[in-house]
Image 1 (cartoon, rainbow, N blue to C red):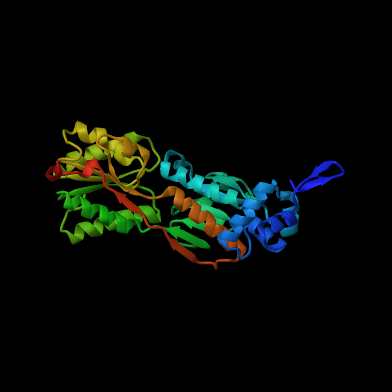
Image 2: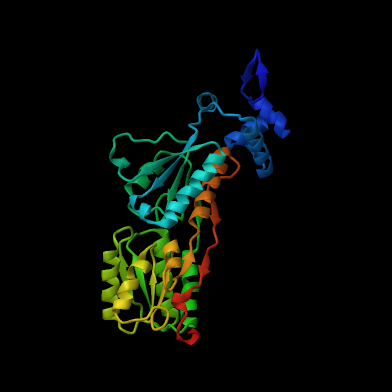
Amino acid sequence: MAGTRGGHVTPATIVDVARAAGVSKTTASDALRGHGRVSDATREAVLRAASELGYAINRSARSLRTATTGAIGLYIPQVVFRSEHYLSFVYGVVDVAAGFDYDVTVIVAGEEARPNYAPHVDGLVMIDPAEGDAMVERLLAMGLPVVSSERFPSGQQPTGVVWSDHGAYTRVLLDHLAERGAHRPALLASATVSDWSIGIQESYLAWCRDHGVEPAVAVATFGTDASQAQAEAAALLEREPDIDALIGASDGFAAAVAPVVTAAGRTIGEDLLLASCVDNSALRAMHPSVTAIDTKGGEAGAECARLLFRLLSGETERGASIELPLELHVRESTQGRSQG
């Protein structure tokens, strides 16, 4: 609190915050709103001062003065709630938005069917936009700044993008499998048409061509229950008995098909290596634990939100593109016979 007046405690003002942080009123205001060219150190100093003084922004007054809503939108297709990667992504967005004193309005598929639907937000974050998604097209048509996690497969592009080279990391994974003795790796691909899924499948096919390997691909729908992935994996192993490694593209595929591999008389980590293009806690806890690519969902969400706020403040120009490096975690499921 700033002090007392007439025996009553008076709330802290933006002037109090600026004085405590050692900056001008304008800089303090910009730091709290996430606007302007304010360094991270200055923003942190202002936020710390505001917290210590108990300063609370009057959202209604701020909205009237600046014509902002105090909220950003986050579009998440319904299937993402089955994915640990995407839930981490959501937390990353919310955490950064809270630091700018912004709320996050969650937008789900199906809203596009409502006439004249338009979320009351300053900008939007989208997760892995898929080709043919009517909600993506509806939101882009609003003309708001849009930051996408992964590039759009085709058509109109977002204002900014945070992306990872999933194709390159798929090749790293395939090279690792070959080093561990795999001669015929197979891919359980995702049916989703997105930059992520396309990158994985194209990289797999290119790797097979480069190494003179006959591709073995099955496709399952991301976000469905485990039965479809299990059925596709069982049919693939029966159809291609010389498969000695299996990669699950989507979050959840590898864990789902592990019982199928065992039922087929194969030993994971020995005569069949198992890996995933998306890591999660279930894969780390399995026996054997499963080798996977860490897609860094929380970091991706946070980076998307930070980029959106930089675009809103004018600190970053439209068309910004940020690459987020990934990491391969090698575990027991790709140990191979020579390592046993």
